[in-house]
Length: 331
Image (cartoon, rainbow, N blue to C red; front, side, top):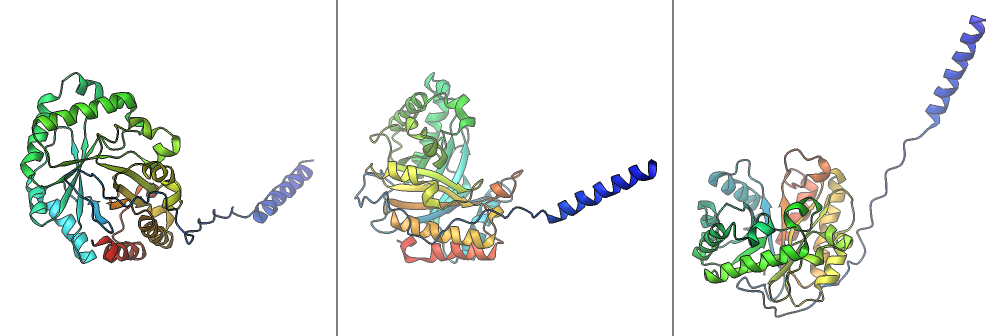
């Protein structure tokens, strides 16, 4: 009996092994076709009332956020200088992130401005209702004065990506954000910080969900419209990812800046290069896009789907290098 049972068991195991060996790994999802004509949805030609930071008559400015190894004066200069050396040109716009209590006009800010570059300040303002209660008036006045002292035009992204679900606890609602925007802008007017172009910048996903437009302060309050768009969790053409935004923005007489864009390392060098080439075509097809800024960073703790740095990826970096050297992006 024991021998018979053992024989049956061995036969079953052999059958399972044979079946397992016949199984094939599921084929990876095919990459999207990036060779087609990109959508042209935001094609107004201007001229635009864009505040003191004026868009180019033709083409578009190019810039980036370049994460330094250390957030110091020297670290910022080295990070920007290294990328620009690799690109063989200066960037037009440097994106810089500031907490609510961090003032613009640091030593490195001043050095970049002296080199002829422009700042896009991504300012992480706090709880909208506490702003409206006047709890941060002193800080807002300080920031307005600090930016006024720069004297050169500054792009200001007040609480960019305000439509993200994880910010809802401090944004409260679209109406609260709009009220806070107007409140802060009024203080800047009191301080005569007239060198600011106000940039409204939600996410591409927020437009896909149909929620982002609820946070729009109005054409009379916004100088540049903006969107942050990534091929991160999913690999789709940039024109599809930001299609709903372009459809919306194309109906407004505003220049557009792509505040952040990036393609994740997870998709491989060849796909990243193809995505960036398609992005270049898409930017050109949508003439309202007057500035673009790459997110040159691998944020700590993020997996390959949320790592976007191009340096070190020869093929992908080559595609970005072609973009920044194109006369269209050197107006």
